Image (cartoon, rainbow, N blue to C red; front, side, top):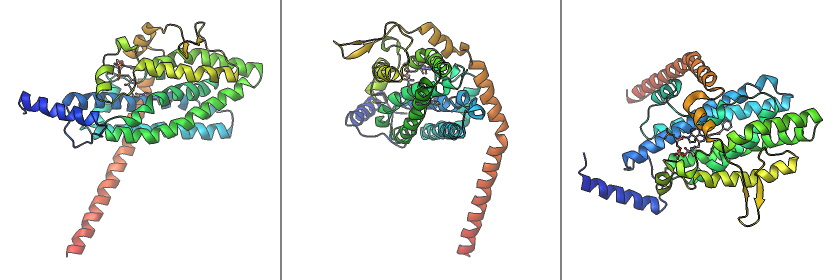
Length: 323
Ligand code: FAQ
């Protein structure tokens, strides 16, 4: 174990590398707290991608056309891929995937609050793409510059895919908003229900965010929760206006002086309730994830058996060469 003086010296050197915008790689020295913070954030992010497949998966069989179905299927598969990159990134820090999944399945791990809301109509699929993926991109583009190399690199590909997701959602909303009165009503209803939970995705206000200061100093986060939330509102408010839908916030107004949109207060009681497991769909989501994991056991067994067979075949080939 390092003496405190050695440790302080290593920490100074580490911070100097961060300040010089160097990437930290898996085998580099890093403070335990940096490692823990990353495992926490990356695994929560991975869980969000995987649980995030559920609300949309609910509509795969009910998509209104073949084109919509193909796009939705591709999107849901992308989310699964994102989860895999992210679990992989967490493993580079020494975390075990089985432990991370256990934490999720026992309800001890957090995942994004947004995925605990139900998808009641087809327009919800549009709202998720437009708002939820839109918020995810806003948060994840800066993560492409995260100080930890494997996370930053995973985010580059994830952001490209999220950008397609956002556009497919916006296009669904645009089509509905320009459709019949009933379709427009359905789109407005979806916006009414998804707007505030989307703003909550960015996390608590800066004053309440216990991790932001340290994560900014380590350049894991590049912007605070409130900064990203404001950017999201600034970009999304004109989009809603363009498609002729109304954001459900009577305080929403462009402020000439600040150059930003002012918006109303967020219901933080609702946010913490959802985060603590008491949202509308928390139980349903965890039940579905546990079941999928149990039913997928044979796939994991088959993949391991296949890998073992390949390993044996390659070892036998090597032995033949030597002989
Ligand atoms: N939900 O001190 P902070 C997606 C927790 S991916 C639940 O501000 P931090 C793709 C937080 O963990 C969406 N919990 O924390 C997709 C902490 O708890 P802890 C996910 C939340 O880490 C689209 C406590 O509150 N994206 O959508 C939430 O500095 C469509 C205090 O908070 C990511 O995970 C929340 N909304 O900032 C998939 C991006 N907010 O651990 C399918 C990476 C906060 O101390 C369909 N993560 N908490 O017990 C991040 O950027 C950060 O972790 C934040 C939170 C910004 C989420």
